[in-house]
Amino acid sequence: MFSEESDPRDPAGAPPPSSIVALLGADTPATLEVSILADRLDAQDPLSRFRDEFFLPTTGRDAGAPDAGSLNASLGSSCVYLCGNSLGLLSKRSKDLVEKELHVWGQDAVEGHFDHPEGKGREWKNVADFLTPYMTNIVGASHAEVITMGTLTANLHLMMSTFYKPVPTRFKVLCEANAFPSDQYAFASQVRMHGYDPKEAIIEVSPRPGEFALREEDILSVIARQGPEIALVLFGGVQYYTGQLFPIETVTHAAQAQGCICGWDLAHAVGNVPLRLHEWGVDFAVWCTYKYLNSGPGGIAGLFVHEKWHEKELPKFAGWWGHDPATRFDMPATFLASGGAQGFQQSNPSVLAIAALLGSLQVFADVPGGMDALRRRSVALTAFLEWRLVQSTFFIPPEDVRAWEHEAARRVGFTIITPPRPEERGAQLSLLFYPLSLAAELAFAGLRKREVIGDERRPDVIRLAPAPLYNSFADCLRAAYAVEETMAEVSAVLQKIGREAVPS
Image (cartoon, rainbow, N blue to C red; front, side):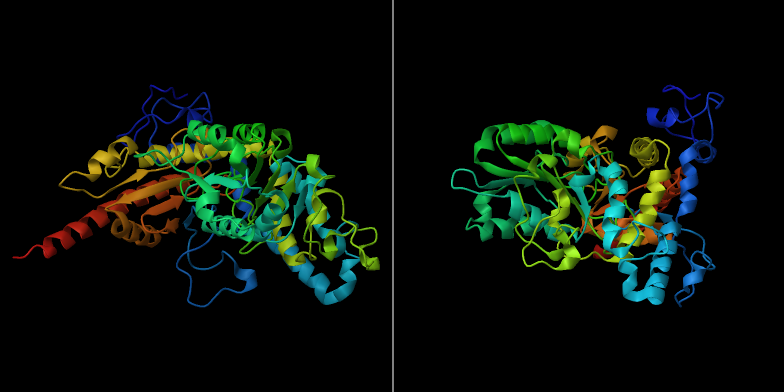
């Protein structure tokens, strides 16, 4: 078995991280060529089999779109897809379930609301409730605390309209600087609706000069100092740009100790890291499902309301689907909210969207050990990718970046702005390129040419996210090699541009 002092290289490099070592069998040689190591890790990990549950994007396809029965049957081979933090892959079960619902729609039409060939509970009038047990396991909640509904930002507005109750002495919203734009827009519009200036009402916590991630102590310090003026603390569980995983339980308890409501946007955390929202006492949370939960583009979203609020906070913007299901179809004139989070529903959910999500959640439910097991695999995959990237000749250690930026003779390179400690990040590494936007643009094109699909965050970051359900160690190795080859190509291009810019 590898130890931290062993040296499996190809031919140069550092020993693998301990999270990778833990996956290796005792009979593994002390040294091993890295491509064989990646294959062995994939072969030995029992969760590797879930890769076969998904359609892997292919390259080299004909110009015409394949028909519904030819997914992954084109001439191209599968690419390395490290973009599950933006859009998760289509599960084979999701495809089957959506096709079944289309069949029910075609065969039974409106009767599908009340009678479904899949049996009791799958009737369209109950379909969101059928999904709830799967979702409660993902987010760590009780049945009454979770509902699958709406879209992320619409749910965020619903929750803020319920829990953001500013008064002259307590009206501020605390969030991370550079929160996802949709969240920033929602925060600003909500405080304006209450008559406050966002410049005064919104407090943004920024990384320290020369750093890329927030420090836990800096978040807690702001809460301690300004808590009596803060009405709402609302962070992303995983920061979309850097991939930083925030200490949800610690921040929640600190905020509530100061009398603040604490909510979370879990768009990049749900299905990515284990969550225990009920146990942590989170007041509310919202999320989308098209990233790590693989529900498809524009898929249905979800929300959580802790049970401690169920008798205190009733929906302010009621809709008929939030009415007590016992009399919902009686169409009474007076709204009677369903219990718990279900009362916040407004319109009947898209059955096709729920079917797409259900197929993926069924895969999650089949994983032995659930989210904790997926998290262990995720940590190992991300560590493996990082291990290979930091050995690149173009890698710049984060602590050297600021000094390097001011050197007269710049070279092409990249650094990783995601926190290095596994407990402080999700399944994502954000690569920051130099010389900034031009290098990032060329690198993104170079990776695509090499059939590695990441996510470009302009002007200068590319995010690579190994999703544990369908990515492999071989994927990570191939991506790391592609980064090295691409950066050599980018360096040559930029050197040529520099030479041609010098007058002869």
